[in-house]
Image (cartoon, rainbow, N blue to C red; front, side, top):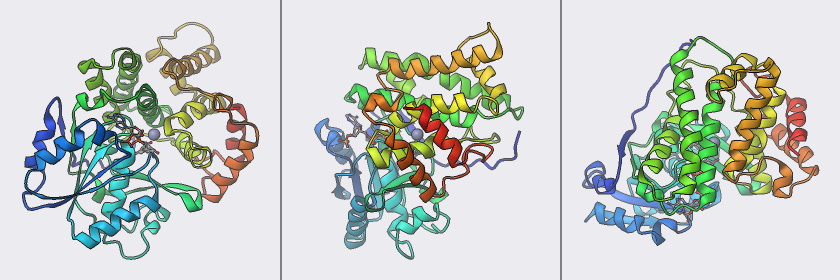
Length: 385
Ligand code: NZQ
Ligand code: ZN
């Protein structure tokens, strides 16, 4: 096992009717900014429930945070917090709202131009406003990690930052709040969480059986509950298990002490920025082809994945690897998430554009061995057509 330093201070309040608990979790004298997305939280009553729970506190709203939250929009919230002297941020939404809130938390008192936070991956963040979350979409794990991804539209850049200062103080996870999600977002969530596990699991063995078996249990649970969540949208237990799996997939635990890949994500961010595909759609396109091309570097773990997750025990090594990748792809497709560029009407010209973006953003040595150079990314992308 590799050395590691694991820290996670986020309190998780899980279950039906837990929104009322935020009254005890937000300081009584806080001046709160509630941040939310394009309106789903308003329409389905979650926002009203949050405001009722906060009682007499000073409350303001900032709505309109879009999927793949933009710097341009978020700077409006930064201005509002500064102008109105607000001191606590409450995100009500999915990964985009939570990531956007983390950026606002770090940007409000940042010395310098806040985009620098993304340019320097959060290295110079020395303070952040306290924040909490009410999660409405199980997918990213942002509710229990210290990462955020922000897009600057004018630069066509989707970059991430991390800082222990932006761990949410608490996150409320009420599975009932996910009942209103459209099928596309449920499918996206299952795919994103699945790929988060893969990025931390499917690399090379370092004798870390706890992390491996924990990762495998998350993958198996996602394979089981993903389709159920689509088939029976108001099944509380199914939504609860999907929600907890997605949180656990990227709260740092399964990635502690093991190598990590993240090439699929880095390539995926460039696809979203150029073509507007949902985050999970980009992962469903890239991951199967990346696994095909990287089969030698990942051979031992691919065989373990084939045997333990997909129960594939017969045939040659390469046949089992092929079958495991095919099953993974079929799983994404079964949820309704297409796994090739053509499925989204994107043609061969995309390859040059995406490679140029990777180069512009210094994403030239990706993967657990840092050996996915631009030529390898190009081969992966060509296979995705
Ligand atoms: O904006 P509203 O109207 O609220 O609608 C949203 C949005 O259109 C809707 N939605 C959310 N909860 C709902 C709901 N609709 C009905 N009922 C509900 N209960 O869902 C749509 C998508 O929301 P979004 O927050 O964009 O989705 P997701 O949670 O998948 O977040 C994606 C973002 O997270 C980043 C992605 O890159 C992307 O920008 N990621 C963040 C990570 C992290 N912080 O650790 C890691 C991930 O790998 C990922 O990169
Ligand atoms: Zn992701």
